[in-house]
Image: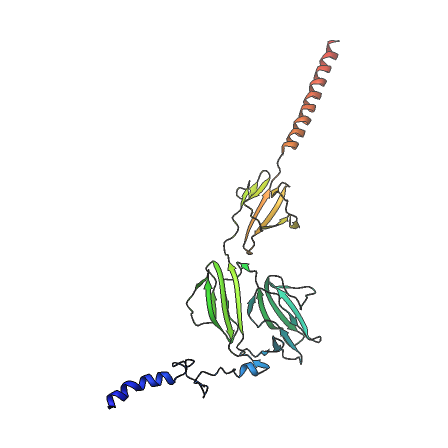
Length: 314
């Protein structure tokens, strides 16, 4: 066979000898018998505890993050990393000798259940009893439908894997910040680089406040009952009347004379607040009563006048 013939046959023989499992674009360890890629476990997956860039430690067995506090030997453990946003309850363990307080939306939580923190809000754990107060951990719990989020900066050492809005994949910006300013259904996947654990956040973003009308209010005043119109299923109404919290009426109509501050919240946590004063007024029953009273007074006056005239005539 001529040299040209060998060159023509050689590629065909090479193709026949290569296993169909071989990925010709793969670079890495291969099986010496068939040339297939060898899937190797990463070194991080074999380590029971992984150090994170923020100084915390992730326990692969307990699936918790551990945080140390200066002046204490014990550690705080949490099911979430510092700065994480979640929709599920959070469990935190505080050492018995540690003087710590749980804050929700800036207010101290009285007798908190650290094993089942579930109410929506922004949380922080502040440790006292040392030279200065120190915030050891913070996290947010949001509803599956929420208006709380406008952006989310991932915890240190975490990277974005993918983002979808209304099932449409978005381009990645290769930063730790996720923009939630646009309304829609978000499906976010991100990863801890140190532990190689994947996390997800699925929420529906709604930033539109309730569209309600306070009928009867003009320039902050009302001369009669005020009706809250436009309430939707899932809306809640909170009322302060003369600086005291009162129960909202089922029919949405406010009648009592006094000063009001009414807050309407929708199922995403968006709110609208209206302050006004209902001034003294006469309702129908009051009007009838006043009319009857006046008629009695007038009748009495007429009777006395007539009686006097009769006495004079005699």
